[in-house]
Image 1 (cartoon, rainbow, N blue to C red):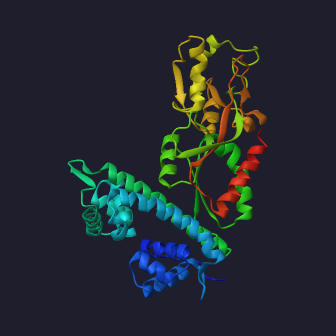
Image 2 (image 1 turned 135 degrees about the vertical axis):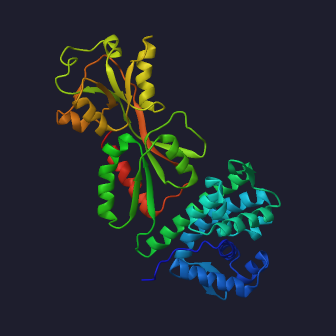
Image 3 (image 1 turned 90 degrees about the vertical axis):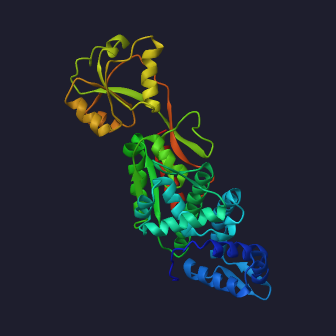
Length: 397
């Protein structure tokens, strides 16, 4: 079996690869890219080693992509297409002069806004980062950072270029995973942003099945506020976010896929004073002490709307909480009332740890599903996991 390695992400090599795949000729690609034919051959040989096998069948008729090369080409075309547009918009000569090292320094500086912090982030010496930024600014013919007392603030052009570079590098990392998968190896990390419902209801089954099918594939599940995970998704630092969908769509460069509909319910500990008395009036609920989802979430918006619709003031005693585990323990130890997803609380209610509170509230359904970048193309491993997530969701409809 060929040894699968990761790419060095040499931008010139990738451009030569795309030129040869399009023209089926090393000599024509050399002319188009302004290099010698031996330089093209050397670049292709290096890429073959990094890819773990030959990317072209080379014959008298020309250079034609192998199956391995045909798998790689769309990834690199998307990555370089995105990157070269941004480089050209900044300054056309950057397409020729800019290196991966410079772009990684640009990304780090745009995030850290400080040479020392950017160097620490990349594990490089501070002068190395300073040199890289100076070189790319010289190529751009203008400053890409505004020197202020608060740090190095990226300009709009810098932010746009850094974002394009992030997504291009994310696509290149997908290519690493594709090449390894081609050889039967599991490489790379699938990064999932998990909102509260998915962590307790949807992901456990899907991930257990995925681990059985892909024993060594790296998977990271990250939780946090929706806005932070949406930002990570858009930067290419995350592959998907799973949980309550946002309506309307928060921004045009992501798409949402509904998996199932969920509704809220009210729960308390067994033996709570409000239990067993029929539907609890809303006015009485307004006087209760609550554990509810954080502001800004679809669940909290529904909770608040219940009282607003009846022109009642919201409850005065509210504890914001997005964790079913913390909510369960709070309710067990108090007379508080919880507002939570019915699916999320199902296990606690089945085990009589929590009890559904009877009310006349008619909750509207919440769409639960996947969010990912609009132009995202999953690797084979990611596609397998998506199918398992969809299968787990189908049982919740």
